[in-house]
Length: 303
Image (cartoon, rainbow, N blue to C red; front, side, top):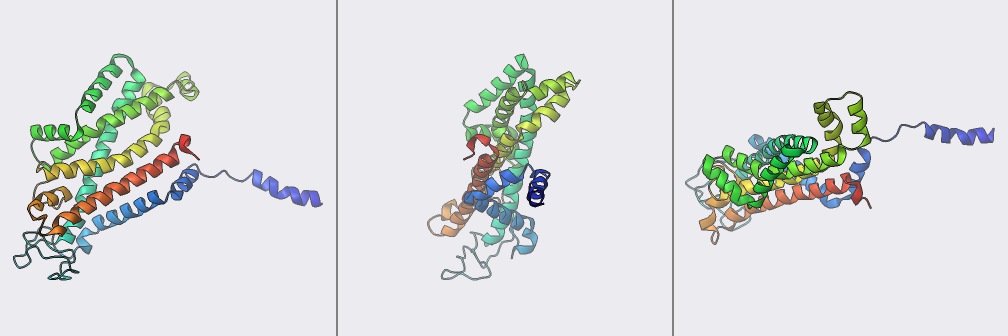
């Protein structure tokens, strides 16, 4: 009787359902304090961007002739009507930063989505087909990689014309080769595996093999690259905006705000510092999340 009672828990444990596949990576991600802090910051920025119409105290483009270069509220001459001060034409800095978060995040996410779709498609075809298709595709990507990213983006915008949409196209082209090369390398590593051979023998076509069999097993490095790519896209878009080639005034884009504040850097620190801090913190947060995802999803980095 005692033996039967003692054996019952072990039998129950043997029949217990295995944990979900995502639980172990999530536990590894949660152990990385920097990644968790970055994720919390991104969640806060996204919430502010979504609720910008509700939480902002003023219009981001409305000028105030009586509040030129008003300092933040905690400095002499500041007021809580404009908690972070105003710019050279009386626009509220806090409102412009929050609306700028909406614009910058939209740019980063949209650029990465386009680059992932196009890059994964090209990488799948090049890696699976091989031969001339692979050579032509990868040589084209190598040509793009030989040029400095910002210089290439400037050339593309100069050809297409200044504007937010053209800047997004330029940034997408700049980061595209990374997704093509990453996908191609993963496809080459996976297409010779037994499960792909078994699917091919069972009658699966090329499209099904690429999309249903190979691509899901290449997702982990692509997720990591996409999270890091958002920070790169935000930084490049801000650089183009600073040069006057991206979002055009009066759009409250962080790079454009920096460009408008260049001549006031010595006498109105908040006009330059606050947009720069937002760019820095957002890019750092996405990089921390990307590092955390890499550590959690790459089995070679398990400790």
